[in-house]
Image 1 (cartoon, helix red, strand yellow):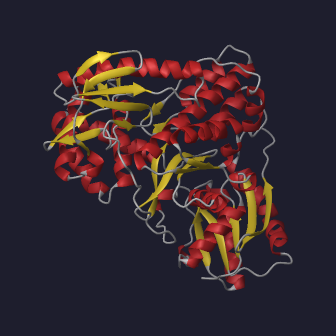
Image 2: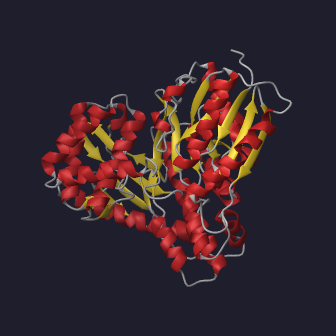
Image 3: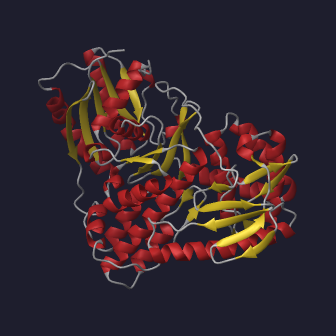
Length: 520
């Protein structure tokens, strides 16, 4: 359906930007807020936006056709900034007598990435100041496969940069200085498809090394974490396209890591032009256009901004459900995100594969530590009554174990099996073992019983937080891949409560962890 140009207004945080978009970008104008020192001050940013928004919109519209609709960033973002953009959009829509469209900022990053790349059904790494998420389209929504459990990658870089007296934004300066650095070990925190940066920031700030070494090692560690969880999402979904979006996507080293990983997995990779990477009006205008064409408009009385607006809350009416990936499994081997599995008779050899994108020292450390820990914790879990493969041999990068000929739980999601999975994880947590990667691919179903595999990210912990995160990983997978996640989660909870004494405390913590991702 041909509609005409759509005006888009972006004002979630630091950048006040507007654009006109029809079949292609007509005009884009931006006027970013630049703090005198430190990071973004929401009230100051809103005052800046209010002072420049009329001029920005006037420049975009000057000499161009009138818009057939007005789109604005409805959230997530900083409330004071969102309200400036929202107020202007409502006034313009009423003045022109055209529809109003409320656009989710995160979804707009994804859609402008799809437009720029030409990709149909990619996995998306969204890396910006406040956000670090891995997303993909499934069952009518953009599902969040994994995300930061504390702060976004961009904010993490800025916090580290400020501690070193570098200017805001810190990303370009850290990238420049890192070119002359050498590697030092820093905390590497990955939990399934989720990740956390706070420990990394603290360690880098306090490292007694030259600044170039701290910058280099910060990037090598943080971006390897982002690449690992993205690869895990590609493995889980079977998708063969990846796009990188968000302001941090301008970093060349992050692009290099993702490109290297995609080459090794035979996955197509794309990064939009720089004008589309940071927050910009073009992504709001383009997403508003495709929403308008699918009939997704917004009454003015229902156009309140939403600072906590998540991508997975948006009903995506403009996309069709993609076909299932065409997979032809090899009966003699299987490939996950970090290992190859080779089958021989009744044995399965899990061989951890070196990652070219990771620094060699970090790569070797992760392979060795994860192999040793996995072998030990598989054996300990088995002693608690959890069904795991029996191990017959351990090498530096390889575990030879029993071949469990079952199907993945993701392909047989029933309430009965989820309740059994809950009982199993309850036994595991009672023994103070945290699996670390509780996805539905790591439960195998054989003879109507469940086996738990892939303890590669497992650890021992009595902390409520760690066990809450463990369950959060599973719940997030259920949310992103199943049609009835609430029913399945409730079944798991029933089983978990039967074998875990303080189950309610841990489940409450899981809910707190979920809320942390909903944008402060």
